[in-house]
Every structure is written in C-alpha cells, then in structure tokens.
Image 1 (cartoon, helix red, strand yellow):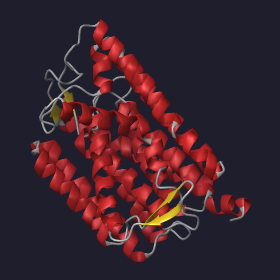
Image 2 (spheres, one colour; image 1 turned 90 degrees about the vertical axis):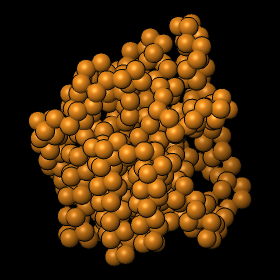
Image 3 (cartoon, one colour; image 1 turned 45 degrees about the vertical axis):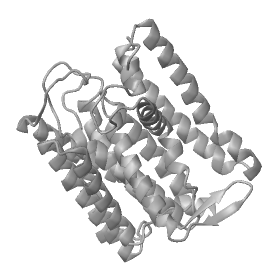
Image 4 (cartoon, rainbow, N blue to C red; image 1 turned 30 degrees about the vertical axis):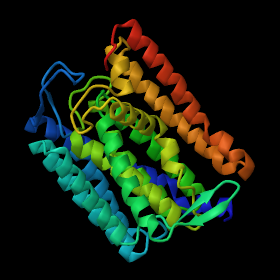
Length: 356
C-alpha cells in the first residue's frame, strides 16, 4: 500500500479530535463514579491503605462504546464487514456488563472465567478468530479449527493478565494507553484502519481516566476497566491478523504487553510449581514483590510503562526487519524481563521476603 495514500486516509486531526472529545467524556463519567462511592477497601494483599472509590473504568467503557457506535454509524474507511463489527460491539458490551457486575458483587474466579469465555465466544462466533500464524523461517501455518481454541485462550489470558496487573496506581491504565497509541500508529501505517481507529477510541477513554489514577489514586479502574482494556487489546490483536489489507503479526499485542504477560505467566508457573491454589488472591506478582521489597510504587508503574514502550519499539523493528532477523529482535523483551526478574528476586531476598 502507498504510504502517502495510507496516511491521507487516516484523517489524523479528525481522529485526534475525536480521541480528545472521548477523553473529556470519560473524565466526566469518572468524576460521577467518584461521587457514587463504589468503594475498594484495603486488605493485606493490596497496595492502598485507605478506602478508595473504584469502577473508574466505567468512564473508559462508556467513552469507547460511544466512539465505536459513532464509528459504526459514520465510519467509512475504518469499518469492518457488518458481522465482524457487530461482533466487536456485542463482545465489548457483554464484557463491560460482566466486569461491572464483578466489581459490584466480587464473583468467584470460576464464574468470572466462564463469563470471559462467553465474551470471547461472542467475538469468535462473529468470525473474529485467528486463521493462521506467520512463523519466521517457515511461513504461514494454517491453524484450521484449532485457531478458534487459540483465539479463545488468547482473549481470556490477556483479559486476566491485565486484571491481575492492575494493583498499582497508573500501571494498567498507563500500559494500556501506550499500547493503544503504538497499535494505532502501526495499524494505520499498514492499512489496518479499523484497528487504528478503535485503538484511538480506547486511548481516549483511558486518557480521560489516567489523571484520576496517577500519580495519586483518587479512584481505581476496577475490574470493569482492567478486564475491559485487556479484552479489547486482545481483540484488536486478533483483528489485526485477520481483517486488514496488510495482515500484521499475531505477536503485535504480546510484544506491546510483554511486561504484563510475562509477569502473569511467570507468577502462574511459580505458584503452580509451589503447589499453591492459583485461584486464590495473592500479592506475589513481580510488580507487587518489587513494591513490598521497597521500590516506590510510582517507579514500578513507570517501569512498566517503559516495558510497553520497549514492546512498541520492538514491534516496529520486528515488522521492518528481514525474516531471518525477526527471532532475535523478538527475544529482546524477554531478555529485559529476565533482567527485571533477577533484580526483583535480589531485592526480595535483601528485604527478607523469602516467601512471596
């Protein structure tokens, strides 16, 4: 695709104006949620020590759904085929409703998991699933029906990963904002206009929420925000591989969320090997251990923002590089995470945190 033509079709000023408008709308909804007083009470596994309003993610959800409905009604270039577009709206709406109920009633992990699978199933039923994987040195592998299972697992894992990582002010929301901006830029330049526009819509919602959550947490995004952001980012990743003029790599979103996904995967494996109940709440994630070992919570959040930026830069390099160089480039985020893990373990031992 001609780059200048692609940039012209982006209509960037108009989309940035829409993002700014959605940010203002999101901020208004967040202020309302603060006044409503849905509260998150402190407990030993949480970082906050004062009762704080939660469910600020309602602002993110409302802004995104407003934006995507406007896109559905008035969008031209940034449209998907009708069944897929309806699938995105339906899956997003169902995820928003289910995660808000989780915030209000604190449902069990199994109920939450089945609800997330239902949301993922709505998206898959509309046709939004990964049909093939492009592998370096090998080419594209046709997944067939297995692509449905891969997509369901991917959507649910990323949704939960973002939910699990939402334990410090600004961490999940900042990572989401950075991932959305990189995703929008990359998708736009490669002709993925739906992912480009939808990412900016989600970025607008997060931008309106973030000032209320970082550096001081006047409100938390809650499950309605973290699960929704994780689910939508994963869904954008699926759409980027399936329905664009120039399909992008399935690794796009995993690169952007490398810090989040690594932390959750590492913690899950460590707890399984230790024989712990992985459905039980805990404070053993690497970012939580780092804070408990004395690191400033804001520094940990900013570090994860840096991981997201690194993921974005890795993605750009990965897409631009010749296929033989891509595996080495793709290992860079993992190498950084291994260094981070070693640092956290050392700090934990120095602080006497033998059991995480």
